Structures are given as structure tokens and as C-alpha cells.
Image: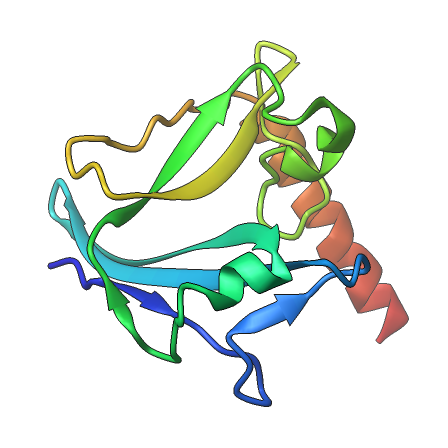
Length: 147
């Protein structure tokens, strides 16, 4: 079961969030779904940001929890979606600080809103599992030492 895409607000109830550039802002969207993968159910939460000029975002008159037609999809690629922000777009293994790689090549990830219901997630499976497990174990050991 997938919910409609909902407009989110910050703690103060603002739907349009300012950026460092006072002319630019963004709106945060969220969609929840339950996925059955084999015999396992997983709750999935997807979010994305819609950027634009502050005044133009206001013209949409979005309100908190407003439901939108469409969906949020995940796109993964070996090519950064934004060369100026490639590091931020890297697919990371949780909060391990380790990027997900396929045969040594970094995977880039973004989530975006679309009204095209025929679009689907485009995912790339990483294969640097051993490196990720080592980093997680090292982090656990470090936390034990610090306790």
C-alpha cells in the first residue's frame, strides 16, 4: 500500500524553507509505502526536495500535509546527477560513512517527485559489503572503547 505524496512543513509550520540564498527555497515532500519483498514486509519512507525561487514556490499555495498526485522515485546511477554536488549524492551505507560501490565504482542516488505513475525506481546493487561490514564493526569497537 502506498500513500499519496504529502507536503511537509518544518517545526514552525513553514512549507517553504529558505536556503542560504534568500531568493531560493525548497519544499519537502514525503511518501510512505509498504513493500513486500519475497516473504518480508518493509515500510519505506521516501522524501525529496523541490527547489525554486521563493516567490514562484509561493504561487503553488502548498499547505502542510497537502496530498499531491504522483510519486517519489529513487534513481541511482554511476554518473553524478549534479557534478557540483557529486559527493553529497553518493549512496552511503547507512551512517557508516562508507559509500556504496559496484566493482569499485561509486553509486549516486537521488529521490525526485514525478506525476508520471509509470516511472519506477532505478536501483543499483552495491558489492562492497565486506568493506561496509568492516567499517561498522570498527565503529562498534570504537564506541565500546569510548564508553
